[in-house]
Length: 489
Image (tube, rainbow, N blue to C red; front, side, top):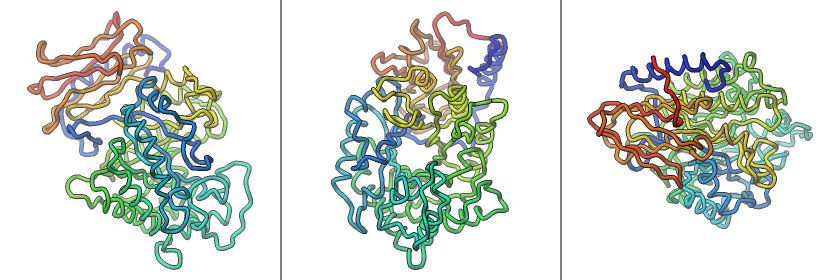
């Protein structure tokens, strides 16, 4: 809504939004799930991937990153979350040999991120299966291409269609037969990561595999009548269950993140992955981590909201997925390169949609040389126009159950509706980038009776803490610029 051009229309819609939020019943949505902290508060996580540099770094690490770079994530951009890339070829350079020094080095970065107040999901990253072909991922010993030909393509993702790459993926998915050891090694490598780093206070969980490619069954249209439903049922889901079991043998509490397959799900097409099971005692801790990219924008074209339906289609398809999975959802990757026409409008629409779906996210990517996706330049200076879109008001921790929240960038108006939930403690914390978006200050309102709620402001961390009235079944919080005349019904 912040990108509507008519001020009258914006204010009319905002008036309707305020009325609608206030009237929402405090009922349970069986498909609404959240990652929670040790106080039972629902967490909303905003942040960045860290970082594509690791793909080509000899040590597979973000070696450009300093302690101050890590601290900037929360200090400069109010982020509380990072998807941290790790690489299988660095972790297990020889079969069954886990590189302890690599995990020690990763831990050093985790220490800085914990100091910054940033939670981390460790992402086993790959692109086109392995650096042997063009990009990153599996160690050379795990490339089983059966002598199929490979010819380097000028566009990186076109290498997925080379026979050697397809055969390597086919052999990886074959959990029985002569290449069954591949998944066994992969699961054992994850178990080693969980055993070594799972207890680190920054580690929230594990993203099993970045954008897995199906190999031969790949269908660019992802049609229900095509080969993908059978692949996801018979090969893909069992793969996840093997890795989940291996991680759970070492860590029963960490969150395990799972993704749709590579390709069209990120552009708004269907996914057929069936519901997964978590063997841990108690409530499952699985989280859905799909990616979102516009084919037009990735191809270098400008964004045309009236034509490009990626965001709308993606929202429909992922809501269908959540009815099946009944897990929290966060967007693992999305972004836009610099200079793309109306690219910032696309970013804003993705973030507005994420708010509608109460979804956290990690944008691609935090590093100085990420092909134009980053919100910093080669000298580590902020790209302010992009950062101004990414940095927004959001509820970091909700002491209850979120029903809905919205941030309207054009008006700098934020609305949060949540209800009481047993077993939660501590204040609701809202990230308010005051120095960026409220130079004249802001006002806070709450629907609880006067005298029953209170707020406090941490100007250094830019976090607003709100203690609400437990006798009120639901709470509507509004944040707005000082002097703003709130729209009425």
